[in-house]
Amino acid sequence: IARSIEEPVAERLYEEDKSGLKDLVEKYKYFENVDYLIIEDYDRNVVEHTFMESIPEALKGANKIENLDEVGAYSTTIITEPVERIDYVDIIIPVKEGELGFIRIGTDKDYIDSKVITTIYYTISVIGVLTGIWMIIGILLVNFRISQPIKFLADMAEKISLGDFNTPIKIKSKNEIGELAEAIERMRESLKAAI
Image 1 (cartoon, helix red, strand yellow):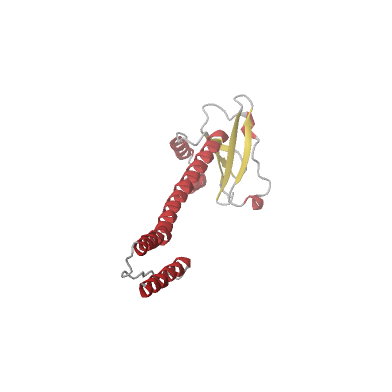
Image 2 (cartoon, helix red, strand yellow):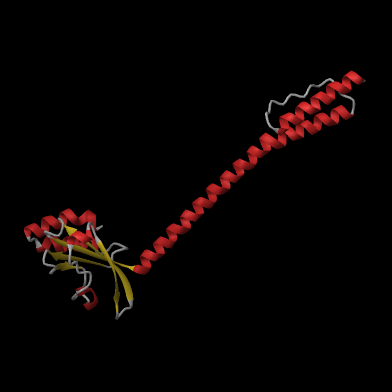
């Protein structure tokens, strides 16, 4: 949200358009994940905010940046509001590298934690479903590549035991099942020749 409003905030701070900033703040204060929005000028003085009255004391001196080079794109701090006992994740984003001001957005830490947990559950669910699909594919491959040839060889051995020596055994597998098929085929030919 802060990145999406950075340009409009920059324009309004540059033009010193307080009513435009107020409209912008009003628009975003109803977002589900925004508990507060504070716009500060380059001296870190509050220009606009979403609070009905004044900014709570716990937020006034919080998240002060001493050296903007250490921050980079944003800074995050956990702030505890002592009266309501809410932990906020206070994110501060410099507007035009801090030359025009700063945007501070606060979100309830419990809200973020619940979203992280939900994401983890979805990820685990997707991994579980994909694992199940791969297991089914593996079982089908085992059935097709191992069980079917063994069943065929068992049927052929049964025919040979009943005296049917005319059906050749043809399995084009180059593993142990192929070796077993060749051995049964040699046995069939030997029995046929002997009888």
